[in-house]
Image (cartoon, rainbow over all chains, first blue to last red; front, top):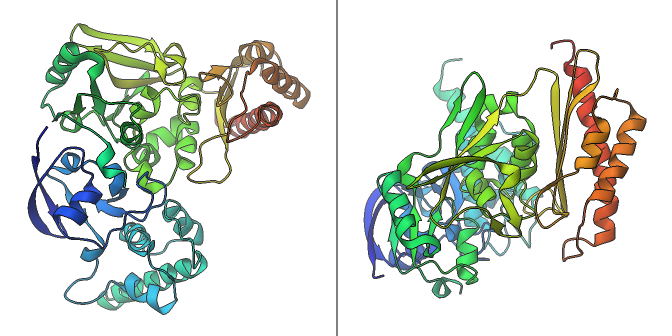
Length: 165
Length: 297
């Protein structure tokens, strides 16, 4: 089969790409759209380096075929910052040294972002569950947990400040 | 690196189930259904499957969860995450979300489906023991109609089932359990996440008004070519009053019934040992649960 047209939303922008159906979402993001922040680690759904948000949920983009995302919304690591400001998680990952080589970081950040979208006061256990599909092979997970806790506290403070309690 | 090795000559996302079944009728085993794809994509890369056409059923809304007076119906495309988010399933069939909780990690659970876990017919499938313990039946649809069969009767061997080339698994049905019934899921893997089971199992016990065992299910995965019930151990429990000694003996019987192999994940002798330990542990937890819930019943 030749190429198929796939239309979907990436980081708030509607895009249309042409790709063979055996190309994964990961390949389409990196190859067709030049969004190389998302990494190709194991290509088998084990390591989590390729995690992106698909219709509001974190998924392994190496385990999704391009045509499966027709009409869907995708958020990649490139979509976490807004108006030139890093997402609090991206900042706290830096502040707590939650990465070393950085290869797992885009997927790790997207998994943590997905968690904080649903829950801005996660327990340590909930953080560990959220990153259970993301392998880090250098820094370890303690600093990641700290970064998520710190970002969650900032998000709560920002919300509290905006409210009138 | 893996990208180029998978071949998908044709891809289609039909608008109706009839259209999908028509393609299956015409193309048979050459046509494969893709749901979450988390296992299928790996198998296509490894050339275990080389379908000439892939049928994507995402437009058919096969992801419903519907509770009625006598059963719960789950569309084959219900994801593991959907199972975890359903209050009805947690209340009525808690061993099923227990199986989902230790399944891979969140990104895989967001894509992987109940139907996929069944159709793969892996002896290690984590969701099959809880489904069988709850007496699940499944609906296989084809353009000639549909047939309903017990999930237990679906499996033939590793990766093999009784599904015909023109059939699609569309629904899973769970009958509501009696009031005094409880179930326990246990998975043994090398880690709590992202691990294929060395042994997985679900036990379920029901008791009658005089506290005698009226139903017993001991369903094991990864210890035989297909998911299996330890039938002799189940029968041994029927009509008896629960005690620690009784459950110990049932666990020993279960050990005698399984036929595991040695593989990269665990040796035969380790699996045998673990079957006895884990069946005992699961039965004791199930008994505990029954006693805990008795005053409400």
